[in-house]
Length: 370
Image: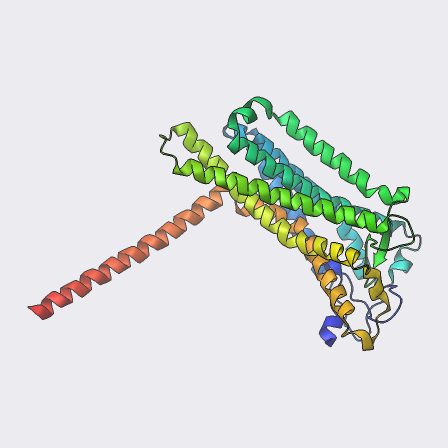
């Protein structure tokens, strides 16, 4: 293992830890101090993106022409609000670890902050996944069963579903307080999360439930989006005359579908490695806490590599709160239209240039023949 890998920061850019010791989280020997600008930049980027997304969703929700997609806009706004709340609750802790340059036990001797951090990681990990599934299911109903959707799918139903998610996920995350599972300090000692193995009963069960629920929501999102794409393609192939209202519906459906696909790709890329790795460690009966006792001689071991991969997966999961709102902001109708116009202009320029070259070449051939 290279010296550079020993100096890697923890999740969300937390301070690098020494590979030897009991996992108390002291700075790594020989590693320079990592700048606090990294987690601070991530926090500002996430807050700005989610705040802009909420502002644009609020404006779009009040617009009359968006009445058909108000349920979808509610889901987008709820996703941005959830990600923003997660940023505000977890990022200050990460920045405090940066600034303290001390062990977690010195910053949090009671362990309550560790439990709160693990609780926040669980809540703001599962909530976006379930909200994305609700968004995908809502679009599938709107496109594949428009009559049923128009008569039964009201905004109050969407609000009830979102409220259910916000109540059920925190209740699930509170199970360790009731003795089922626990949150523990994780290697390299700068963050807390669900303990895969522990003395409490049900630690592996709680971790398996978290990973299983996350993967289930991802699979549900993918299945709903594929069903929506299939319905849109079949409608595009139909020869029915397109009225003005159906064209407007098509534009709305296409825009929301592109946004859904973007969010689905971000969620899958950010959360799949962590969830799969958790299940793998549970079934192989290994624990992330086993990484605490590494020494310089064990840096080439297979378990050490898995621990580094797990740490990378956690970093990817932490990026989800930052990337989600920017997917919505970048895939809005205005930007998509400008992109299409730019692509069309480039295509026209290329075609015109090709035509001019063809005419010039044909003239030269005629002159030569003459």
